[in-house]
Image 1 (cartoon, rainbow, N blue to C red):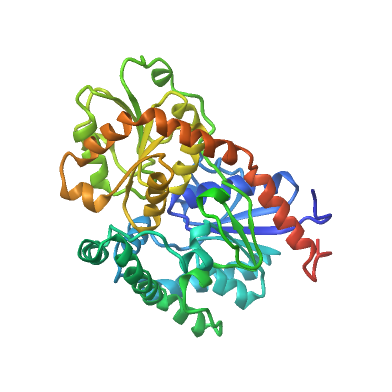
Image 2: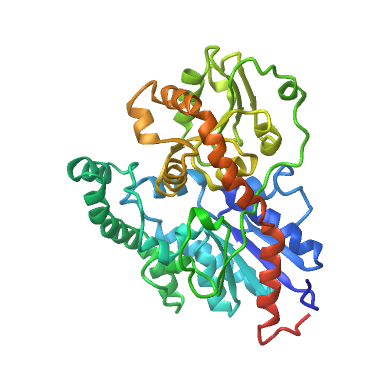
Length: 422
């Protein structure tokens, strides 16, 4: 499918987080293949890493962003919220970039400030979202966020059902409080944003990148389910992994770009020692030389995850959506160690659908040995979990996320009043 015109499309992800850069890169390649001028904007950490984006493969423009550690601090604390001065700098840089590029469309991926700049410049926005980041789902959350001490205490005191009734409105208020500086940054530029982060992230077009069975229900206006946009490095399976004997359970440990550093230390301490063979991807978060790495670990910066999973019995990860979707595509059960509320969604769904086991960073740090015992529990129920993952796998494999997303984008652009602009 084509628009009949070459368009300038700017993709602006949360650029210090690999998941958001990766799925934007996958979509960008598909749009570029169709003849559009495709630009990506953000910090160079991943956008200029040749293993992620391919060096000079895509046009790149630098924009300030939240470093991953700062972004995770915002997600891991109920009270923390973004610095207003940083937000103002981001908006100013975005407005200047849009003025230079004059794009036909901005594709936002968890970068709410770009929506302010786009509205100042009169540019439409398409947003890449997971369905649980939309208002219909936010109004019916299904779990209490256990990484936050206050909500964990509420759950202990009241029990899960009563705690959910109390925690849901409290968490909505917390999200509104945390996103207030974004709204203030918009107001300073004459853009009135909604009070809730869920609505601030929504675009003129919303592309939902998860399978329907994981988050069913009504979709917001202008929203379409396109399925996962799965990124991994284009690399062969390392020979030392391909030659690993299958004499013990083999684990992939992948904490993406947002896992807590202490999780690596716990993984080395609790998963080493001979019971498992472990393949661990650092994603550039740690230097293995700073850790006591057991001999039965194979450690690399990036790995072709789908090829590695084909040789694994279980994946131990942080609940990142990228690894969650890759594990389902490979039919491999998982152990989720969620480090903040968003990642607890994968843990909740893992337990709900019987795809493995789930815990949280807070619980793992409080109980030495919990990571190992949770992993052993998941291995003990591996056969049933494999069967249940297999059913979801068929649904996920039916999606062609990049093609469907690009089709939706081109259909949206054809309907714009300036659709003939070249």
